[in-house]
Structures are given as C-alpha cells and as structure tokens.
Image (cartoon, rainbow, N blue to C red; front, top):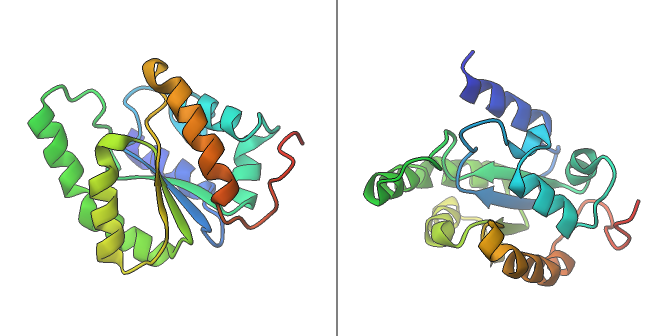
Length: 167
C-alpha cells in the first residue's frame, strides 16, 4: 500500500456517516503533516478556530464535518505554477463525483487559489449548498484565516451543536 493510499484510508476512517459540512483543501501535504494525523498547520489552525476542542478529530467527525481535497495526492511542493494548476484542474471531476455522493449542506474551501475549481466541482455535482472560502492558514494569512473562520463557523450546519467549543 502506498503512502497516498494509507493517507486516504486514514481520511476515510474519519468520514462521518452523513457529511453535513465538507471542507476542501488543495491536497494532502507532502511530508508527514496530514490533517488526519493531527499534525501540521491546517490541523492546528482548524482546531484553534473551533476552540481547541479535546479529541478534535472525533468531535469533527461527530459534528458531520469532513475534510477532503481537490487533489488526492500531494501537489504542495510543485513549484511550476502551470503544472500545479493542471494537477488541480484534473481534480475537479473526481471531486464533483465525491461531492455528489457526499451531498453536503455546506462547503468550505480552505485555500483561495482553489475556490473557482471547487465551485466548478460543486456545480458539476448538482449539489446546492452554500460555498464559503477562507485562505490557507499560512503564517502571512493566519489572521485573515481566523477572522474568516470566526465568521463562517456559526453559519455551518452540523450534526451536533457546537455552540460551546470548550469541551
């Protein structure tokens, strides 16, 4: 089994029975900082945005939240913009099929650079759900990410209440 297959298997282990809100990133990162391994900038930033909840991934799943990616293999280290963009564009139809199967009530794009591609996938999927966009929480976008998430989170449908995020 390849590392990409292992990451996808790990991701699927956190898939809720019904995906209420779908979060979409660019791709799993090259390296060992995958969200579902409880590592990396996206994991830390998302956990903080939701109030540093204990056992965050279990809570995330129980809430009907799921993080998928536009591209299922790492593209973050591809420096050639045209190549990276082409790889992203190849992810549109497969993501559209997954969105169609998931039937989320809301979609949150976790990187401004992929918003048009995720919007296209949502349109192709036939799913009518609001689409929210926030920048990826790199250090230079951290404040904007926090502000956007603070605005988006109260609007998200959920399988369980998340008014008190301190549990």
